[in-house]
Length: 162
Image 1 (cartoon, one colour):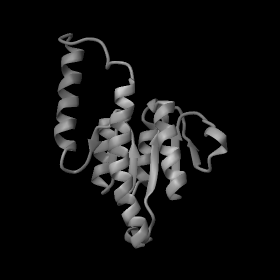
Image 2: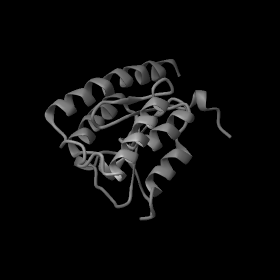
Image 3: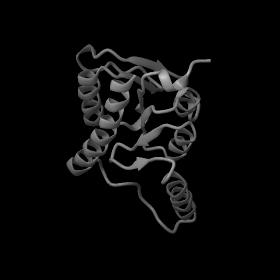
Image 4: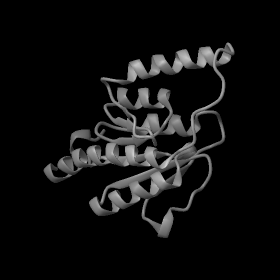
């Protein structure tokens, strides 16, 4: 067993629904700071320009990528996902998650977000609400970049103190 406090943080990408423009923001920051990225998805995805990262291809079973991330994420890691149940598991492990729209999931906010998600699912299945979320926009990318930058600065501090 390794001491998680001495391990450098890892950036995890739940690739199932992560927009290309979000991944590009992540790659630039990780390259600048020399932070390891692990991309997890149901199919292989080539990073732009051969960016050095680890790509984990999981099976096509339901939640296979989420399960892999949840089983391997550690204290101080950062996970990019819009999956609220996965974010809950990530926060339980002592990590933080950010959605591709810039919403931060941490131990202080995750239970409320999970309750809202569950209520929305009930309303949707009962026919009270229909439709999905709006398309990813430039405004969403700006919100993601701002949230991501704040958390990258925290990781940068961790990296310089290790």
